[in-house]
Length: 151
Image (cartoon, rainbow, N blue to C red; front, side, top):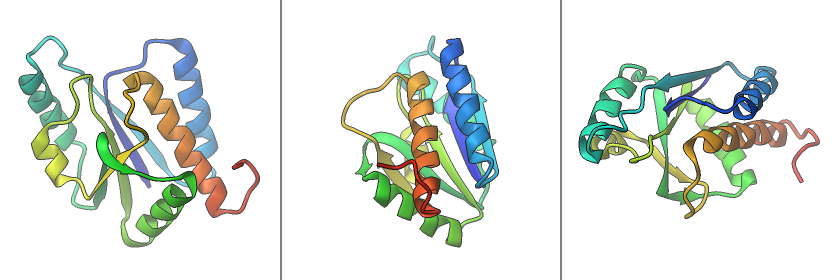
């Protein structure tokens, strides 16, 4: 099972449509659960991240192989990412990706992660990044199954 926990919700319909499409495609390969927690953007950054972390922890279990998405994380090619997911699926019952809010991810929560992943040193809009992550997970499963899609 793959679980994606995101801080914040989607506002634009085109991003909602893309998210629904990739979740539908992924269901061929794995159970997928997308969980949204409310962003605390009106609080000072440290307080907001701490409150968001409390909400996120309610959705985590000991079975989860937690992967935080952060600029400081390790960058992988699509092939390496596919192999990483394949290896994790052998050893863990749940792979959980975490996309933080606009202030980032609470440091204590980062310490609980088993892997820190970066897609780039660039900053992406959190709403758009959700679609990018889903697309890369879908691409990873296509690569694992030697199916055409990846180029």
